[in-house]
Length: 282
Image (cartoon, rainbow, N blue to C red; front, top):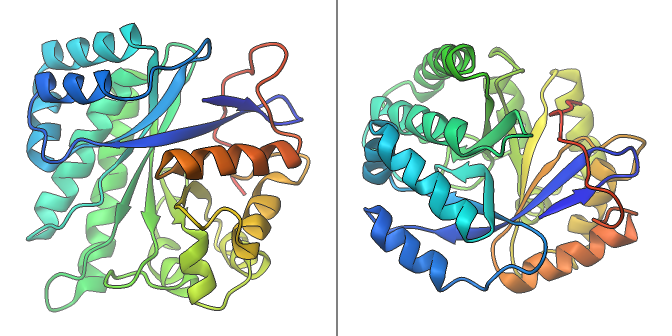
């Protein structure tokens, strides 16, 4: 759904629809039909597309048009996708993300020019840090090319998490500080931030110094009412301008709880339609 920050900018709050193991449009549409029907407002979805399905969509304009129509006719819009899947090598990781970017460029609403894709950074090869840096440079170039051809500004948000290359904010700064900050940034999960004993203020200060943005925030059941989550949302949305405008709630209860937290911060969907988000950075 679209919510309005007090400065007038749109804040997107999406519920997650996992397509795995769906591998064709018919299966995805069946799942969409089983999703709670939206009310008068358009419902924002975050799709989790597996590599094979993303590749098929990226290679077929017809499939993307069918998906676009299928979403719109059911009252859904998509501004963010998830690419958090296990990969055997760097090339399949890189290819999956660019496939998702090509798909998302066609799915964005007409009045929205920017979208986001979240991913984890795998630990692959003998020197994963150098390899990841090279792949991120290539990824940034690919995203730039997609923007040039489509006019859609797609950014990749790298999520911090155990079992990945980036487990702390310092890891994120180390790897992402040398790549294009307009294309690639961070995906925050407040519960993981709590596990690393780092406050939102400390994390945002480190990111600001490295010229990195919080592109997306992922929220899970039980996390929204936690003090760390409330502090994170307050730090990102409590100022004169939002420091992140793409938020993803994993379940219906998490979505409802997040709406309540947003309302407490003065962010709602009342009144006139919010203007399109502009992808404001830190």
